[in-house]
Image (cartoon, rainbow, N blue to C red; front, side):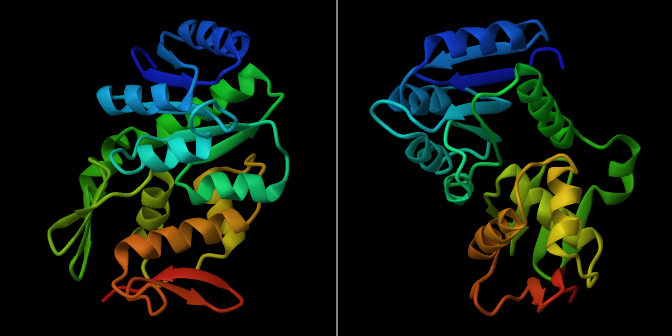
Length: 231
């Protein structure tokens, strides 16, 4: 995990100090921001492997920060929220976050989530030799570079959106239940529920489908789940 670069955004300086110290013990390079505007500026001018982003921030909320960062970057974002309501968690995902952790949290949980996301972002060793590029019709997925293209035009996907699409494209016409997708993409220990899957499918369709309500690629099998239609 050497030399991974993390941006920690929280207006509570003691929390930032604790997270920074712990991540630096794992050889991560950590930048810190204490308000929303500073966070956007740092994200715009630096390349980060992951961002830890608190919801309640001065100047811009975490949701606004997440939304603005998504306009120019697909860096994985984990939201930190003191609110436990499901809708608050889903709202964070609506703006393009990849995961969330509810305060108060254990730093070991934070580090585990970070490392899990980073592992998923790394090339998959020998497996990439056979699945380096997946193509279907005018859709092309570069699994090593984690980039998606439609008719040669790149489509900006978040880490989770890419992983959902990659899984479905690797298994065309196979229907995955929402529970299966949640377990396979987010992990068995993910505390969220299946609405997380629905949110990401909707966001994915908005990006890859010419008519999201009449999808060409990612279809719904009513009462069962989702599948990728192989042309």
